[in-house]
Image 1 (tube, helix red, strand yellow):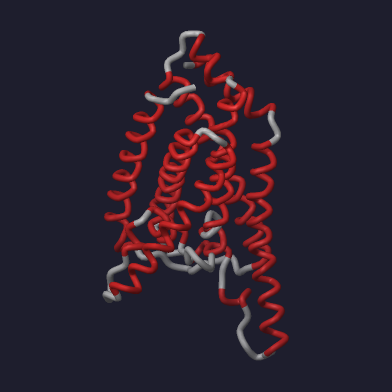
Image 2: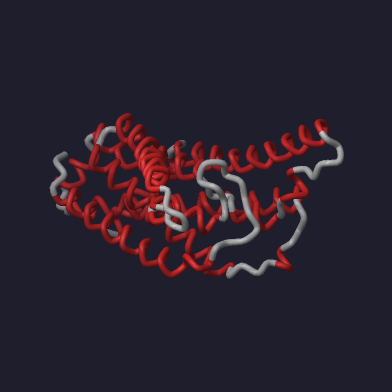
Length: 265
């Protein structure tokens, strides 16, 4: 297993895709901040007496919302490319022919891609922190949120997203189809749940809150559709959120192992 991990790390770091995806993820954080600046300018032009976007948000809320829909879509593309690249080249078949089990091949790619995703998330956090301190008010001293719980929640949600997207990509095995599914599936599920919420129209209840995207939004404090940050987080959902996170993770891991053991190369 150690040899496989070294092989995957070397292959990842020698390639270009991880650096391109990381740069795109960081660029989206910066772009999101610049959009706030533009909106603030437009609002001030329309009504000089109105409070602008900049005065409405803070460095903390901007940093907390660094990992939103844009990030999950970007890592979905990375995971699809990385998980499927060996199938087209026949590399996985050759590795298994050397005596490595299917599960070891699966988990070596899984672990390396997960580490890459977490590193990208850290880069986005640091970029958002620096950009937020420049653009918005520094309110970190007055934050009342349970920051360690929020950080842990975001990390766990990323692990679940990675597990689901990696399982889908590995099961499909073709980069093009896997990229499409990794982009469309999460957005499609969220859209369907939103429509069901409108049909049910029950006050205080939303199916979207129980899907991983809704759970992630509760930790980022951002609207899943608009990516607008808020200063507070609803901590009443923390217990149910963490329970659902581990349920989704266990289900995704089980499916991944199931498909990996039966994968034909």
